[in-house]
Image (cartoon, rainbow, N blue to C red; front, side):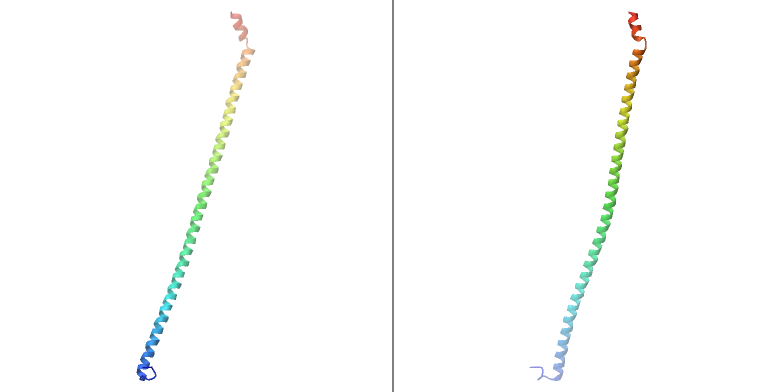
Length: 121
């Protein structure tokens, strides 16, 4: 029967049921919207957390790279220093050899060794 022909009480009950259904549907929509908002907030938080973690990793990587580069620079400096020490040591040993050779030559030339050797025969 159409609602206008039914008694007032039945009509009121049906009207209340419709209102309740509408309220439930609205509440479900609100819950879904709240869930979406909550999910969006959680996503935003996770994105922010990831960004912070990435910044921390970048800082660590930067400091690690910088320290390793400084270590490599120090190694290069050490190797250059060692090389220069080697070069100066080689030069010094060559100078010693040269001076020893010149002393030997001057001792032979300057002394009477040659004449003494010749004279002894």
